[in-house]
Length: 99
Image (cartoon, rainbow, N blue to C red; front, side):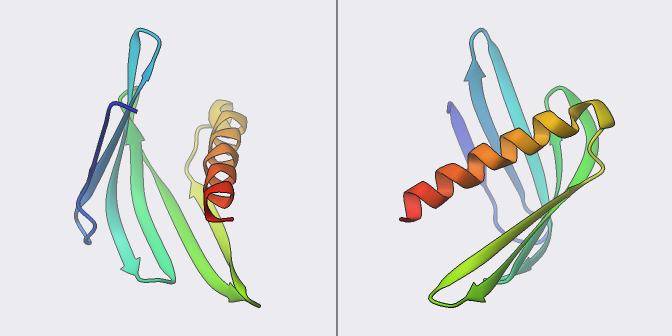
């Protein structure tokens, strides 16, 4: 990770920049919904494509813990598997950090 910037408000943006060898991959987002602690939605795009997609995260109580659901709409068909693997890795890292 090279740089992370977050402005967590509706209309606020974030940037996550990570080095991938010689390449700098930038992941951008603009928050469209924040209902703490239940729901976050943001438009998402990268340095490789300015086409925006929509990510919606919901968090619900589940016994003594919580259940997080993530939906990513508008992903290009040829990037669906790659996107799913990326989110699975991120959520897996989050789960490990919280346990």
